[in-house]
Structure formats: structure tokens, C-alpha cells
Image (cartoon, rainbow, N blue to C red):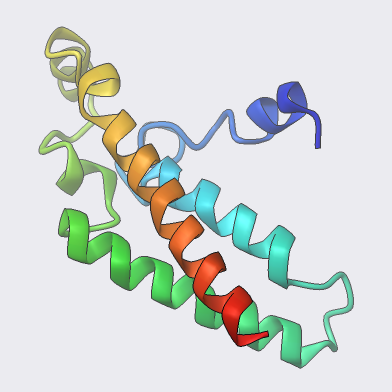
Amino acid sequence: MEEEKAIKVAGAFGGGVGHTGGTCGAVNGAFMVIGLKYADTDAKNYKAMKKSYAVAREFIKQFEILNGSTICKDLIKCDISTSEGIKYAIDKNLFTSVCPKFVRNSVEILEELFEELFKED
């Protein structure tokens, strides 16, 4: 996938999906990568589905060990589903000072998982 298209596809993930404070966008992005690597377009391919779900669960486990949660408002300690929360997050530069850590953690976890799984295959 072209970089520009990938950025656009993930455009609504920020702030826990559309600034709702839900699942961290870095976590959702990781799920997309897991799906691209292990899922199948055939919904009846249960082996691929089972593999992608197992990798996603392990990703969640590892992310929570590192960060305590996969939920945006818990991670940044701010409820960005409100205008006050958004203002606070912007004023404190949370999106540029805190969130990159979660993106980095996601990439590192994926690298470790894929390397581990590559050894098994």
C-alpha cells in the first residue's frame, strides 16, 4: 500500500478513534498490520482467522504490559472526547510528546511477534 493511502486509511484512528478516547490509534494500526500479514479475504479460512486473532491477542497483552492499557484516555490520562479534554491535550502537547511512544511500542511489539512467529513457521 502506498504511504499516502495508508496515512489516509488510518486518518480517523487518532485520539482513540475519532477523538472518542477509545482504543489507541497505534493499537488499531497494529491490528491492520496483523490483518494484512495473517488474515485472508476468504472468511471461511478459519486457520488464517485463528492466527490473526491469536497474534492480535498477544499484541494486546504485550502492549498492556508496557503501557497499562490499550485505551487512549487511560494512556494519555485525559478524556479527549470532550472539548476541554482536547484543549488540555493540545495545551500539554500530549499528541506530540506522549502518543509517539505508543506508536513506537506498537512497531516494536509487531517486530518481536513477527520475528518469533517467523521462527515457528
